[in-house]
Image (cartoon, rainbow, N blue to C red):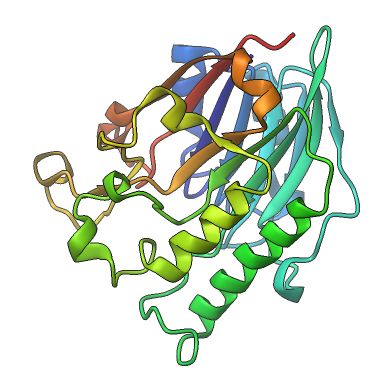
Length: 265
């Protein structure tokens, strides 16, 4: 199974990029974040034309939004939490039924958190911290087996997940209150599948700011996008790629896709 996670930053705007991505790498399952499209306007027919007969999505106008596109049957999970008491389209989940077995797949778009890393004066940062705490508590009380968490988690947890650990320690996405909470969430049940292939001592980014005029030359990236798996799936991991070159495509997202290949039983 070839799995992709990508913050597309507007599905309808970047549908041509998704079409090219699908033609280039033939994914089986694509998890999108920041789709920015309300459900009645979701381009279902265009996605089915790409081979994704099975769709699960939740969106709103102009903001947020998550979607799972699959060539395999999907069984949406119901009764998911309402994170931070907000109905803001940041999490969906489904069982993906393969030919012989299935996996439980969660697609998250964690709040960005604003600019000021102080929850006392920045409600967006308070929202982000509480969201991650709630997610950790929820997964901690579940029986997590054959489970995958993907998405734009909006936190770069490790020293080499950012271009400068020292300079970004007080910048939202790499502050200790965020990284410590994200690690507690991961430790509830999961292995960092990207770092299974790339050692923590090596730089690894999935996002480059639009503000960088020459993003490639400055290379001031962060790893905000993640794939986690439960330990029972680690033997089934076979390859991982960050599609860095897509940051150079015409009208790109500021995030690039992450591709994970699994030999699912």
